[in-house]
Image 1 (cartoon, one colour):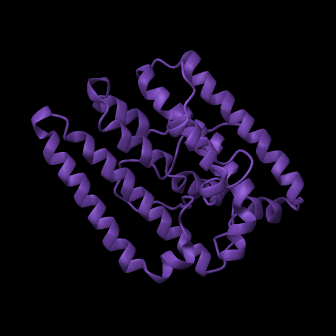
Image 2 (cartoon, rainbow, N blue to C red):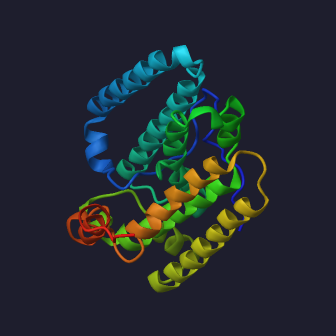
Image 3 (cartoon, one colour):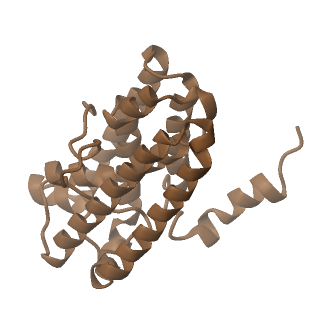
Length: 250
């Protein structure tokens, strides 16, 4: 499947026409406390401003502009998704995925992580990222679909915007099992796109591609068999302990 391009992830200031959630996002709560959330977002932008001031002497303050724009896209996407929830709107898969890839937060995380990566990052690196390269889109697809497969039942019970599972089943008249089977194939295709970028990409240095790969790897651990983000106390506890408390001696 093709994963090129992104309508929302750009440096344009116009409001995008798409949106979706991160694992910790609750549309019902977010919608009821919009002003509080907006205030928190402004506080976060202040953090970016502080980082920018610290980077002026290194002539890298331009990087913070990109990180802030990515965060703005994220907040716009959350707002649009909250509207879907309160309107009880189940979008088409095309509508949903345009939004869902943004609120996976991978574009925002990648842009923010680039800020502190040293001389390997240039303005061209950010321009490349904001054009929505294949490896970014593939990572977002891996995140969104793996997340939805294991978390959609719990999320629907507590009150969430429709996930990709509900959207696909409604649009195509499939069962949940058939939908999950299709999504797992799409995740496999997305991993192939990630691998292809490492084999053929010359657009940016390898450390930047590795950063994108590592984001996808996190999802493969956290959402492989269950919603490890929500159930971190059980699902991830042993993994964290094995890494930090009882590491294997090399």
